[in-house]
Length: 57
Image (cartoon, rainbow, N blue to C red; front, side, top):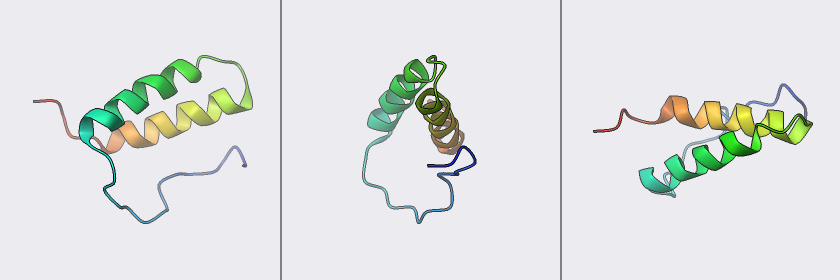
């Protein structure tokens, strides 16, 4: 996977709950603390997902 890969171009299909995606973002942010290519990709995916989440109630 290239560093400039965006996860925002794929079709959207609601397969998980908001709680599950919030938990996934937390885990991805933890993984993004690694100074590796995978860590960078985890951070990018976390960012892409977090931007699409509604504000917590």
